[in-house]
Image (cartoon, rainbow, N blue to C red):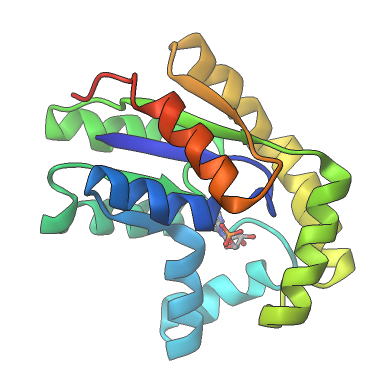
Length: 191
Ligand code: AMP
């Protein structure tokens, strides 16, 4: 199973990504988590990425693409993967197409979590208190939502044209949303 999970910041992608990935027995690959791990370890990649992340901006495509290419080449991703937070730009869509083509497989579905924007801001502010992420201040949250609307939301249409989008209402408690996702994805044929 090769899946993407999309939705605005705060839609609950990370939480649901892990459950869905477990369900299908594939790794959940979160570019945000990989960047944060690198920031935490102070690697050159982390130092570079932090500048953008702290401002709510996207890390440049070239850096992100290379990181994803390396990650999906790992043995655990051979049978499939769920990408969380990638692709986020049109250029990343093209790169990912090339990466998947090269494996002789195809993307099976793009799961889109739909949420109410006001609720999302509330969720992010709450997470900021709990996790203390430096990119969860109110200004940065606003910027991240803006960048998402400008750069990433249009990708849903691109994948919809390919007939890959599975839209699920992301509002409600975690278990409820999870059940909706499983119901929606279980009818998707796996390549
Ligand atoms: P996330 O945890 O998915 O919200 O990602 C946190 C931050 O990491 C984002 O606000 C971006 O700065 C950076 N990031 C994660 N994924 C990408 C991506 N696909 N392209 C560019 N930047 C990304």
